[in-house]
Image 1 (tube, helix red, strand yellow):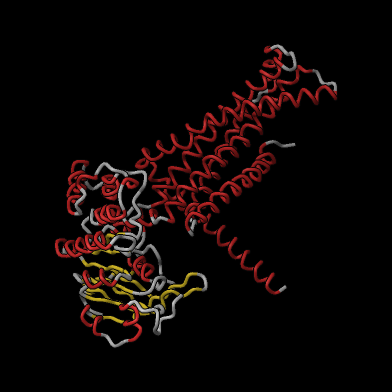
Image 2 (tube, rainbow over the protein chains, first blue to last red):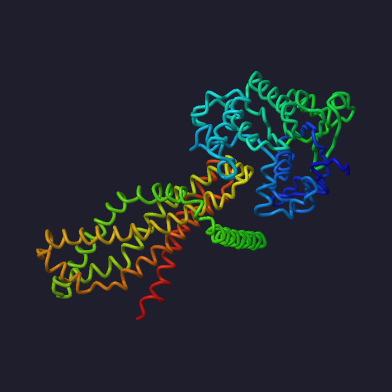
Length: 253
Length: 259
C-alpha cells in the first residue's frame, strides 16, 4: 500500500441476494491519477464506485479514503467527507423540480457555509466551466442528454472536490457529445488537479481520459496498466473486451 | 411441498427484513426532528403540496359521507320507530368519532401517500436520492421529515374540515329528505357533541398522518426496478397505509372509548 494512496480498497466483497458482484477485490488509487475502470455491463463497476462514496457498504473488506475507514465514518463526518468527493451519475440524477442553477448550488446552500451571493458566483463559475452559463434558469426536462451530464458535472465540482467519480460518463450520448464530455473530464482533471475515477465500457472514452486502466472481471481486478499496456496486452479476456468481440473467454450474460 | 416451505420461508424473511427497515427509517425520522428549525421552508412547501391541495377532494367526499349517513340513519329510524330528532345526535357521533378521521385518512393515503411514494420511488430509481447523499445532504432530513410532519399536521386539519362539511351534508339531507328543521338537527348534534370525542378524533388523525407519511416515504425509498417498481411500491403504499389505519383505528377505539 503506497503512502500516497488516496483510496484503498482492500479485500472488498459484495453480493446482492445470491448474486456475488465483487469478490475480495483490491485496488489502490493514488492522488492525481486519472483511472478508468472498464468491464462488462453488470460486472460491478458502478457498485465499486458507489463504495468509494459510501452509497453502498461492503459485505466484507474495507474501503479507506485518505486513510479513514469509511465503515467508521458516520453522521457529520460522513457529510464532510462526501463534500471532498464529487460524483457524476450515469443518468446525471438532476433534481427535476429545480432549475439548473438550483441543482448546482443545492449542496452549497445546504452546507450553510456560503452567502447567497457567494453561491451565485460559484454556480456561475462552475456552469461556465462546463459551457452552460446560459442554461442556469432552465429545468432538467428542457435539456439534452449531453447538457444534463454537463450540469451533473457542474454539480459534482461545486464543492471543489479532491476526487471526482464518473459513472458511465458517455453512455447514451452521440459520439460528438461523448467527445465533448471526454474533453471536459480531461480539462477538469488538469484544471482542478483532482483524482479522477471513471467507470465505462466505452474504450474510446477510456483511452482519452485515462492514465491508468483497470479491468474488472468476475468480481476481481483482471488487468491494471497504462493505456499503452492495455492496447498491447496478450490477455485474451482483456483483448476480447477492448476489441469488442463476442468470441472469447468472457461469458456473455 | 419442500419448495412451498422454501418460498414461505423466503417470504417471511423478506417481510421481517421489510419491517426492520421500516423501523430503522422511523428511528431516523425521529432523530431528524432536531433539524426542524432549519427545515421550516421544506415543511411549509410540503404542507402546501400534501395538505392544502387535498381540501377540495376531502370536501366532496365529506359532503356525501354526511349525506348518506343521515339518509341511512333516517331509514333505520323508520324501522325501529326512533324519533327523527335523534338524527343530529346519531350522525354527529358517527362523523366526529369515526367517519371523518378514518375516511379522510384513507382518502389522504390514496392521494398523498401514493404521491409521496411515486415521487420518492422515481427519485430512488433515477439515483436522485444517491445524488442528495453524495452532496452531503441527509435524505431523511431533506425528504422524509418534511413530508411526515406535513402529513401529521394536515390530516387533523382535514379532519376538522371534514367534520364540518359532513355535518353540513347531513343537515341538508335532514332538511330536504327527512323534513326536520335545522334547529332540531343542530340541537340534537349539540346535545351529543363531546369535546373528548372531537379531540380523540384529532389525535387519531395525527397518528394516521404519521403512518401515511412514513409508509409513503419508506415504500419510495425501497423502490427498485424502474417504472414497474414505482408502480408496485405505490400500490403497496396505499394498501399498507389503509390496512394500518384500520388496525390502529380499532386499537384507538379500545383504548379511548371504554365499553
